Length: 367
Image (cartoon, rainbow, N blue to C red):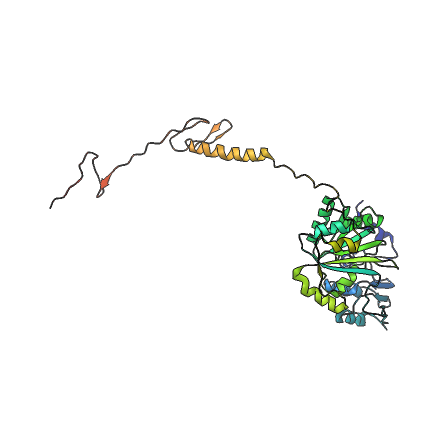
């Protein structure tokens, strides 16, 4: 039975709690599989992220299908104007509860932060060495795009590191499987985009690597907040490309961090091994690269043979042979392998539209 069918059967038999994205819940409601007219509590998590992703109209459509007597709880790291308006419109007697550190400068005090200026071509080598540090357990690598997440995960697997991608192009079943393997320790490295990793709470994450510079200070805080939780310590490493220096300086200023000038770092830099406790013997691969598939000579030979055969056939009198059939061109008939018979071309001289005899002497003029 497919996962979709199991979910539909569960909704039909009756459930106490339904969890889903706005688009998925709205689709189920439109199909009549989900009845929202009798719910007692509505929880909106990551409301600011829903706003950024354009889900706010879907959220309002869902809330319009719920009873007015429901209890509504809204969780958001930030409170932009649109989220405040949503709360005032759909919540009765709302109460605002803020949870923040007394010292706003120490965003994540239990996490050691390293910000390095790294070249894109050398990042895979640096990451491979970080994954071999002494205290590495589970690692999340954040990328800016889905394509980068897939490419980095495949590169790590080729190098011998158990890794899995997590991005929006993956099916829901594949994403759940990747998270399950990550939680169970079957895969210790998760390469994810910001959207896919939003809300992930997995214990034992020791390192967070920002493969690409975060878009803003809020994204940076969310990323590195996946480690250093519940009294544990963690390490956050951020790679800054040369083109992202201006963006990083804005993040650094907003969070009052001491990394205004990121240190230029390569896979052979001494401070890389010293700061993260990496053995000098660590290399960029745990296994040799996979052999490349040889090119199929049969396909090449078939193509080249077809081309040469066609050309030789056409030049040998304009005939191409297919099986037992022959095609002729003009007056000549050629068989496969027969020598070419030159055509005889007749050229007639004319003067003033009248033919000139070949034996006629050329005209001469005298003074």
